[in-house]
Image 1: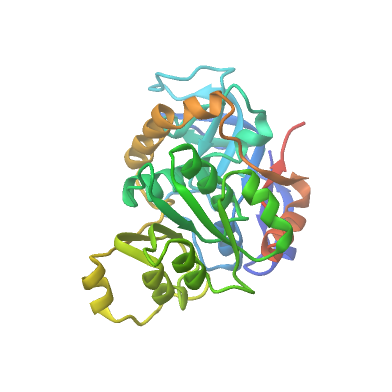
Image 2: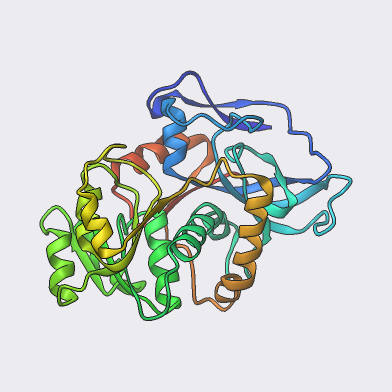
Length: 327
């Protein structure tokens, strides 16, 4: 099968098209003929050598795919050959075939095509478990979503909107503002020109927000604490500005804040299966009804993975970047 391989850790130029044997499926896995694969920032981090795959995972990039089941392990009970699925995987997505645990596969929503479905798993799993399970976002609450123009951001904005929250988001470019308003952000803060803490305090009469989803870290930590209201929850999912911060602990104590965070890739199959089941119950009806839809910014053929990574790292996109593996 054709795959995207790395000649060595480095920039996008290390990505090359090559061939490898098709993966073998284990008892509880299905083999998916990949139609499309989502591109995510963790892929870029792995390419750079700073985010190695967990033990036992494929070293091929790619954490989410959509395609057709072409083989089933002997203990697979839900899926059959010919089923159209999207899947969260621990690696191997930039390829014509990938093996996926059956519990991490979900049916492609009625309203979506393969390209759109490939943009669902990584972001929807991440947003559900962090915003709604760890962050406990409720109807009528306020949420600040950093990086609103990215795949996580555009997903979180829509999901928070559908569950009845008031959405604040930060973005880096004016070109994103209308698109983010259109998908449900009530307040779009251009962080290069505005102080998001001041804007939030002004817009909330000093009350702050209830939940913050942050992938920036570093110097944003103390500012996030300032922007949170009483009993607020900060959920950390990445550290683009660094892994360390200094904070006056009394502010956390006085506001009775909850600080939490997580990663997704290293979780067990059982935990990812549980998240998939929660998504199918709570979010798939919204996808099937067309109330949620991944925002696709641009697609590339598989052999242009380099260009896809260059776009991802430029941050010039609003929404998801997807590789088309099979037309």
